[in-house]
Image (cartoon, rainbow, N blue to C red; front, side, top):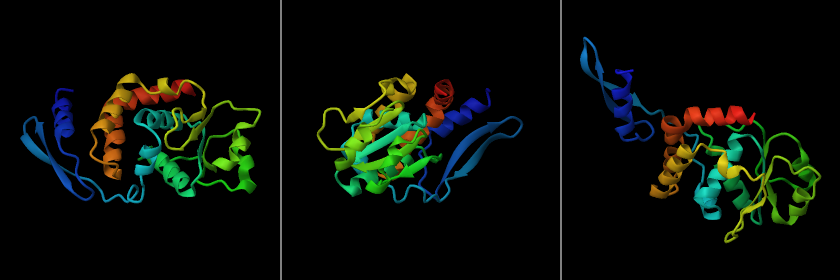
Length: 217
């Protein structure tokens, strides 16, 4: 442990490299002395085409975290908006927040009216539905485990339907760390959002978040 801690501390303090770039970390190895370890970030195109600006324009930081938490628990989530572009950009951005993991369940950024019955499926999903079809979403017998998010700008409470525990899903420390990182970010670029969620997940909330997920199951 005494050997690992200095290395992890140096890793945390090192600047996060751009794709394809390398960062050098000092590491002390008994009988060998101090060595420089080179870590190269792979060229990963996963987030290159994800637009987070629409997500953070429609929802505040706290609301994004609640949606993220519901996604981690693999709940049924429906996004409501007038514009098709808004639905597509937001739902893809929400799925990208799980990086490096991927959403493994039903994923339909824009649900056509002919397939609207999919909102009644009992399994986890991420769906985008136009606002004119909202009644089909809310007028169903079972609203259990369902989160309906209104992406209209300016609404006080974007959660049309919710379970009520969304604020308490994430461990407090993990939640506060991400909120601070989001508030301090320079822009809505994929790299900035990636750092806010992934780095805090690795160094702050990984074990707690996994425990939270297991308890929920």
